[in-house]
Image (cartoon, rainbow, N blue to C red; front, side, top):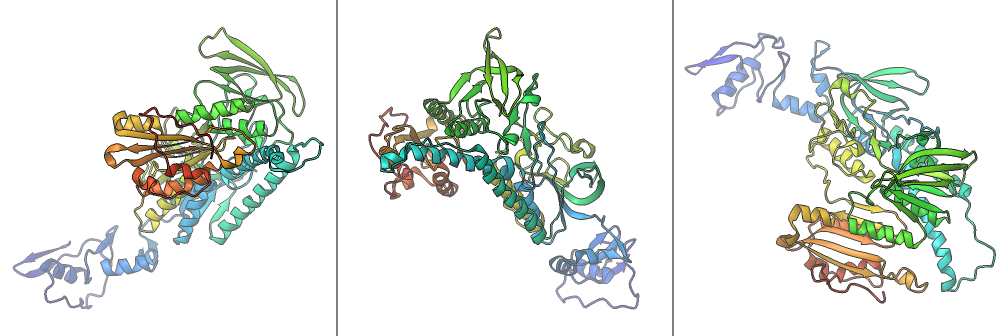
Length: 578
C-alpha cells in the first residue's frame, strides 16, 4: 500500500511511479468512522474509495473513479498517462475469423455493446471451383438451400396426393425443372448474402473478404483473393471458421465427385446419383433427389445417422427404401473413373466390402455425391503460431465451458468445437452468450444438451435431449422409461399412404419424477413440433405434465399428450386411424 501505521500515525511512503500531484494539495476528508487502513490510503493516494487501482506503477484512481469511467466508457482515456497508454493498444477489441451464422451473430452483439469489431471471411473454392458469399455454410450450402429443395420434393408428393382430394390434373406428365429450382434458390441466397453485409454495416462492424491467419500473439494476417495482405491486432479473437466436406482420398474423388458445397448451385440436373455416406447430409440430399424423381443409391459404410437415436435412424432408412431409395450397405468406394464426359457425364464407381475385401462391386452413375463427414477449418489459420491446441485427428478445438481455448485471449464457437453439436442455432446462441459474458457482464453459458434439431429426410425427424442409447448409458436402463407410439397423420389417410410409419417417443428419468430427458418424433413438420416441446423440456417438463396437457385435434403433436405404452411393457403401439 506504500505506507505504514505506527501508534495511530500515518507514515507516507508513496509507491514508485505514483502519478505526480501537487504536494500542496489536501486530501479529501475521511469519514469519522473510516478504518485506519482507509485513512492511510487517503493520506497517501488522496483517494476516498478503495481499492486504489495502479497500472504499471501508475496510480489510476480509486474504485469510484475507475467504476464511473467504466460505465461511461471513458476508461481508456483514464488509462492514458501523459499521452501514453498504460495498456496495450490494439486495432480492434475483437476480430472474428469466419463469417458464418455464429461469427456474424457474435460480431454484431459485440458491436452493440460498444466494441470495435472486424469480421474476416473467405471461401476457399471447392475442387470444382464452387464458391459463395457471406453467411457461411447454413445460408449458402446448408440449411437454407437444403430446406427449400426438401420443400420442392414435398410439393411433388402433394401433387401425387392431389387427385385423391378431388383435384383433376390433366393427362400431361408433370415434370420438374432443376434449372428453375436452383435459379430461384440461388437468387434467394444472394439476397441473404447482401442482407448480411448491410446488417454488418448498420451495426458498425468492419467486414473484409479476406483469409485470416494468426502470425503472432494478438496479431493476424488477412489475405484477399488478389493476394493483398494486411495485418491487424486485437485484444481478443473468436474462431468461427466452421467445417468443409471431407473427401475420400481415393483416385478420382476430387476430380469427379461433388459434395454438398457443389450440389445446391449445380448448373445441371445430377441424374442417376450415388450418395456416399450415412450422415444427415447424405440422407437429406438422397431424400430430396429421390423426391424429384431421380434414381438414387446410398452407399453406407456402417450405421445410419451416427450420433442420433438409432431406432429413429433405422426407421428413416426403412421409409426411404420403401419410397425407392436403394442402399448398398457395408461398402466403401475405392476408385472413381470417368467413362463419359458431359453435364452430367457417366462415372464408374468401384467399391469393396468392409467385411470381405475380396467382395468388389462396380456401378455406373451420372453423379457421385460425397457426404461422409466434415472437417474443421482449423489447420491452416496459424493456430500453431499462437499455441492454440487442437485435436490432431479431427482438427476440433477443445474449449472450456466459457468457449475459451487454452490461449486466454482466443475463443471458439460453432462446428469447430470438440464434442459439441454442429448446428447453426447452437453457434448463434453460443456466440451471443459468449460476447455478453465478455463485454456485457452476463454469466449465462450455452446449454449443449437440451438442443432441438431436425433431420429433413422425406419422413422428417425431430429430436431434443438424449437419444435412447445415451440415456441408458448415462442414467442406467432401470432408471429410464420409454413411452412410444406410431401415429398416422390425418392428411395421409385419404391418399392411404405410410400408415404406421410415423413414430413418437419420449424418454423419462424415473428417479427424477419421470422428467422428460429425450424427445423424438418421426413425421411431417417434425421441426415445428419439436421446437415447442424443446421449451417445455428446457423447463423440466415431466411425463405427468405431458399427460395433463390437452391436445389439439387432429394434429400430429397431439400424440405426445396421450402416450401410454412403455417399451418395457411390450404393448401394441400400431394405429388404425388418426
